[in-house]
Image 1 (cartoon, rainbow, N blue to C red):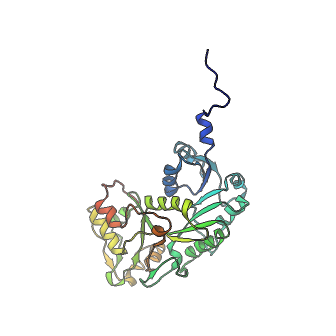
Image 2 (cartoon, rainbow, N blue to C red):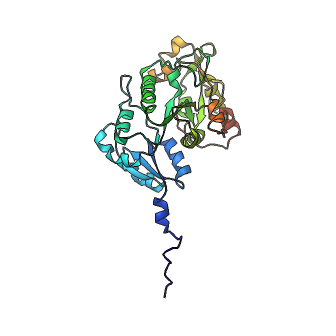
Image 3 (cartoon, rainbow, N blue to C red):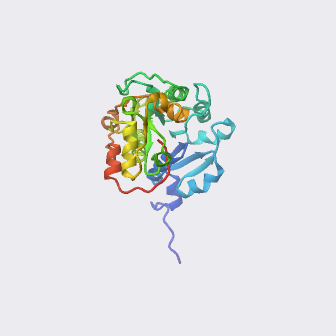
Length: 309
């Protein structure tokens, strides 16, 4: 006869342990959200909001509890209020005209009450063009386009919650490199017209998001950037050399304007060098890849064929 488990036993079924984990809601569970999920699935009951029912099996296999909802349709978000204690907000504003972010408004309205902790990933684009000068977290934002204004609008909304904000620059990884762009022969700016760009590896950004969840100060801004001091053309050259591809041709600004699409040209119209001292001092994160060169030169051989700036 099987021996009964005493009423005072500390034994708990494995399923009960899993559902006893504190919930963490990830809104916008794409690449960075997936990297966060991989690191926290053992510690939290990760709930992932997705607008695509096709992604439900993938998210479930990765260890998340998927919820189908769309930030563009508020009525689909009613279930979120049950998971409002800890929120990782990674969803971008819509690609529309105007300077307001209705998605962040919809999210906060669905949560009903202020979360205990909310981490929002914004962009260093809110600083605008600085003519190659340095900016840090104390620099006043000065967006130069509606896309950056929408991000700043989202920042202002989440500041009313118990939130901290990570401003991220160009995100790269083995599958987020401009290889297709290089193979197409798309031009870059001539050295005398070139602009500074800023970078962070996707794995390091995921780690910074997690650190902000535990150590970030409410209402605080953190520049989630590495220590690279690269102009954009030099970045393209570095990637091209690493993968044995031709370096991009260089064009003066007036000729390049008509040679690239408007969004790419907008990136090539702003130059700034972003400092991120707080991520080490306050979040206590030591970047695995302190510069793009460290990742490309000393990192493992990366596969991958597509990517973006």
